[in-house]
Image (cartoon, rainbow, N blue to C red; front, side, top):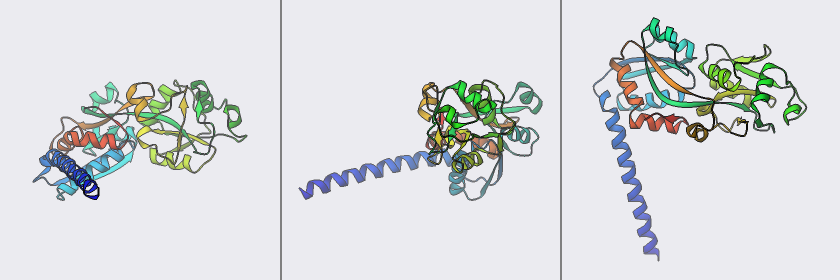
Length: 280
């Protein structure tokens, strides 16, 4: 009996080693274009993109330490502007740039993921399901107390993003139907800052990228559909957008190699691992 168990365990170990070997071989193939390269790559813009950018950069730098990659946030508006003005090599945006932005800046776009944007509350908040109308009334200020939507008798603390945010834009257009956002709303600067603010405020409501959600916040179902990678992928959850990376003109050098890596099998696996929907 002991021999049988040993045999089964050995078979599992061999299978795991083969799987690891295959995965490592795939990653090495996708990173091979960085061999012999050196220099610095500057990336800035959309904050929803950062987890994928960081993991991709980590794998590239581990493969070739002669390459340095700096990653900054700032929002989609800044990513589009800085890429267009040549201040960074790659700009990130959680919305498709306008036709004017594409024309004026001569932007080239790479869409590498699909993402949802969902309302979130503190995990202890019982009001974790709203209608679209209730959400719009909360953000406009018509509903200002949690007791009116199934929660406790406390004032609702609103959180939003600045108008340069791609996350804000898709939430405003698709979840709020371009409705008003109360001037009383607190403005935060990134998906990470939004998550921290809501996680620390039991009476808060905000919105973040689905790929940035974790157990520190509770997703709010809209008309019975909770925001998640699965509901975004199926199309059941409608508040979704593409994640883009932009260059001024045709990408070249390290920027070209980085964008090719993001849409490679290894790059798209990073997209999945970080909670987004791959495009390949």
